[in-house]
Image 1 (cartoon, helix red, strand yellow):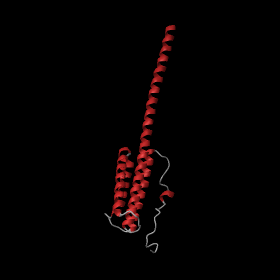
Image 2: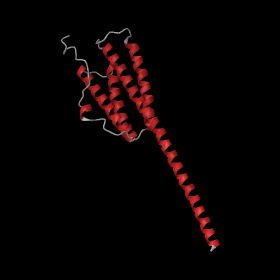
Image 3: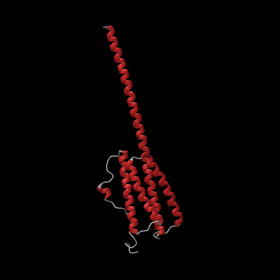
Length: 186
């Protein structure tokens, strides 16, 4: 019996060692997987934030060009210089868009495509490639900012951010735009 007791003890020690080894191995794999996911989430967040920043930079450059082109604002820089600034901003947006395409899941990619199309419509109108009224210009901006909100929502879903971005209070707010010259009696 003494040998049988020792064999049982040795088997129990071996089983405990193997169990400990397997458990440690699985926990280490899970830790590495979690660290990798966290790292990719950080890269995604940086990419999404940079893309939105580049989109807004393009919109602001387009607004300035549009206002100068339509004699709504007088500044020292000319249309040619403003057009070059818009082209540079568009290049930054395109590069940032490619990074989103590399990192994002399908919903974010679809939202980015919609946002790109809306932003390009503003760029084209600012350059004079397309024509329209001031009200149509404002509508382009409403579409673009709705697309920005859609991108935010898709990015939040992809990153696992809790809560809703599109609520009754947020979505009901309209863009704050200056009145047209006709509205102001100018």
